[in-house]
Length: 292
Ligand SMILES: Nc1ncnc2c1ncn2[C@@H]1O[C@H](COP(=O)(O)OP(=O)(O)O)[C@@H](O)[C@H]1O
Ligand SMILES: [Mg+2]
Image (cartoon, rainbow, N blue to C red):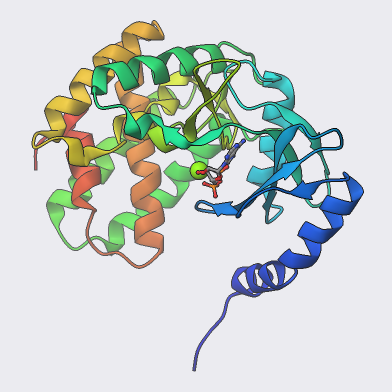
């Protein structure tokens, strides 16, 4: 018997209704399609022309808590280091966004220090903003991770994996009382920084939350590992660059990065994994977690 979860059914229904949504929002906002649609992990992005011919994109994503938080974050950032929100619908989370140049992302920049310096500059600006209400808070996210850890530990076969996950949770346990109050992007990796005109590079695709900027480093540290044969060294170099640019306390930033490792591992285990992803283990080791 094939079991289809409620979420999957909702996803299928949303996908089936997508052509109608596109037509609806093009009509409501008087948009002309202007090229083939793009997509990433979760969204459909259609290049459009606004009345008067200005280029924009229509971005449709299944309405979820993260999508609503994205609208809140984009409104608060108001284009400072990130794509500008031109219009939006709070119910369906349809967004009309300024059009950027999707033919070039930071993943296309050959020199990793150069790419990471750009990303660090954007992350510094984004996380300089105090988080508004209406976005999830790291305080609750971290407490929830700690509550889920014992069950995940019981699913891991290798004692070394259990030890590593426990040590990540122990670090998060020490930090959870000081979760921070900045507006975080949560997913600022190279592919989510596009070339632009009003600035050379701008961020897209936030899943904002309130918290410590140290919790925002992992996607950058984890970007495009195929550029190296020594990921630990690359991660540590990037960590130095990011913590210096954002003027972060290194120990706290490493601790919250282990928090991201914990978050990723919990999702994997809850999806059925019985061993930790070697990539997560490498990241934990680069952040100083004990070697198994
Ligand atoms: N403002 C924009 N201008 C031009 N292209 C965009 C814009 N926003 C997104 N895109 C394109 O659509 C893709 C998916 O959008 P993204 O917001 O990253 O959604 P996902 O959550 O699906 O990754 C991007 O990788 C990029 O190619
Ligand atoms: Mg994306």
